[in-house]
Length: 147
Ligand SMILES: [Cu+2]
Image (cartoon, rainbow, N blue to C red; front, side, top):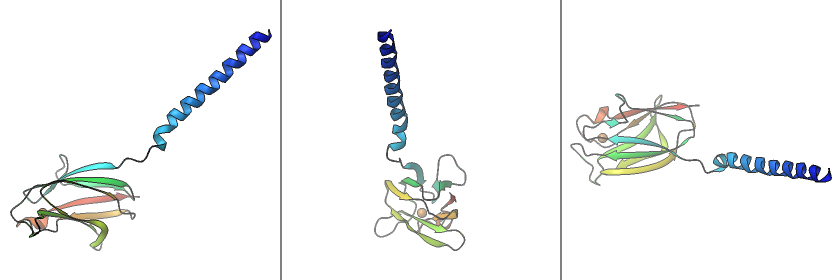
């Protein structure tokens, strides 16, 4: 009888250990460092930004979310003296106020920028800051920041 009780007890301990091991395994991904979401953008030779198959490029992010912009730039007609072929600058839509950190000059090829989305929800617009062709004015991306 004592042996039976002891055996049952060992079984309980084993179950408890198994549950602890499982719960720590399940919790593990939440403890891993946050991954930055990658957004692929083409800054194209026809003075247009392109994202996936979107007709009008839109980026939707959460306020303060960490993202990585993977931008591939292809030269349009004109370029800056420093070799920049397009720019990438974020403005708040309502007053065209530039968003700090979000201002890049693009060289031909692929570049990555990891940064935080604006902390204020609302409408923003990315504009090209290099006069890359006569169609330069229309080179933009709508960026929506969700609360
Ligand atoms: Cu451009």
